[in-house]
Each structure stands twice: as structure tokens, then as C-alpha cells.
Image (tube, rainbow, N blue to C red):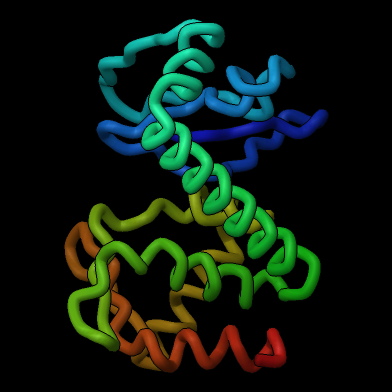
Length: 174
């Protein structure tokens, strides 16, 4: 499932993907405010629901679950701050670089290589970094020409994570 929101003009903004066994809606359940995003199914899903008052009782009665939810919310805030910094300080091509690093983390095969499968769709990357599909295509082509990545069947292989990271760090001033 995908966590999305829409601008007033109808442009879709992607925040994250939610995989098997994960949850969503915890912020609205905790604070009673309207939801901050919508969920879009990317494939058939089995979803269970828990009423807000029941969820809060679970948190109150099971501190280990409350701590996991707090850790998840902390990661959400940290990721959001990172993305806000990227949007505020990086040019579109560098935001694509940063997003490739972000989505490659779970698929790192060795310290300097990752295989992202299935291959991310240009429009999905564009939605995450506030740019166009055309910009994403151009950046991926540039990175392929430089030997940083290659496309294989349904996999995007980051061949040189260190180089990609240094490209991002160079413009972030790190």
C-alpha cells in the first residue's frame, strides 16, 4: 500500500510504501485529528481495523507496543525532516539521487551495491521527490552512463553506492 496525499491541483505526493504486517492510521487514532494522508492499495490487500479507543487502550495496557509505536513515529519524524531538508536544499537531480539511496537501503547486497526489485517506476520516484518523470529518466540515464547504476530486467542495480552517496553529500555540504 502507498501513503499519499494530493495537492489542491490534484498532484499526487507519495510519502511512503507500507508493506506486509505494517500498520497505518496511528497518528489519527492517537490524537483524534483528521488523517494526514491517504492509503492507496498497489495490489490486493488484507486489512484489519482497530477503533481508535481500542488502539489507545492497547497502548495504555501494553507498554512494549506503545514503545514500538513511538519508535515508528520517531522514524517518521526523522524521515520527514530529511525529506524536508532535501526538498529545501537540493536540486531535482540531487533529490533523485537521495531518493535512490533511501530506497536502496533495504536491498544492499554488499557495502557498495544494491539491487532494487521491482524496478521503481519513474512516476513513483518523481512523486516522492517533487519533480517530473522526465527528470527522473534523465537522471537515471546520466547515472547509468557514469556507471553508478544499471537496469537489468525488472531490477535497478546501484553498482556504486559510495559514489552516489558522495554526489548527495557534496551538494548537502557534508
